[in-house]
Image (cartoon, rainbow, N blue to C red; front, side):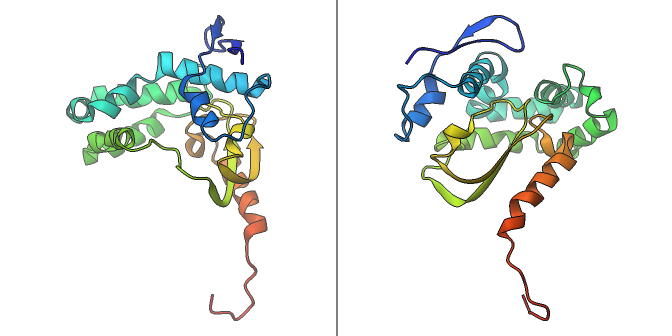
Length: 212
């Protein structure tokens, strides 16, 4: 299979994609034929994965290996904590570099204060360390319960439906018109509407007078 080449949407320059972990994890499943040419959404997925690993994953590297080091610093400096958090809102939201297009200062400060007042920046960061000690955030076996996906265009990494289907019992896949990583905060109406539509056919009618 040839490496995928796609312009980097953030920088405008072509990027040669290395298959690396992104493809290795999918290939390990054994149900996809990588002899086929990559489809466009797969090329986009690899481009976002490559960009994330090269430019945007520094926070995960340190939290996944030395969480206490950055944790003490974040718990000691409100300005440092704000910079650590707000940078991610700017990078991972659908704001074209202007974070206040999507979030008010009050909303951003509310989020920062949840960690500052409780002194939990360090414990939140340990999630990455614990994931590194196990198998990460991906399930070992196929997930058979019904699964719905709301795919937001500015999500950090955007794997295509074809990659998800071997591992998850997909019942719904929605390509959202806007929004990013913090979808519940950024586009609550879109997300809630999709959650409702996902669960609608799964609801079990309850008879009037039932104790359920």
